Length: 128
Image (tube, rainbow, N blue to C red):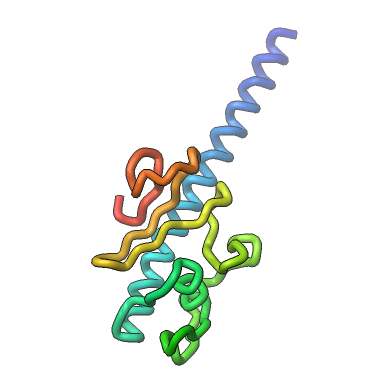
């Protein structure tokens, strides 16, 4: 009986660790992809997209907003479940990714604690 409980406990801990790791890995992948997409947008259009985070995300998905992305090029693919109602990309914990292009590209997730630590703490950032 004790061995069964130990095996079950190990399986639960392993599953939690894998689940946490996979969310962390996905967030790290996402921030890197978004940062590269922003660079691609700037290369193609001569400047980074300007607007709200939702507008920036929508431009990266191929929309033209205020004359930006006039060719309507897609730089990032995202499923509807990976975005909120304004079009912002969501991290694995359901929070919008933080995106800044002034003065340089900074993309990060608030991480598992969902607190915006501006890229520090447990935040998962494109520049770390």
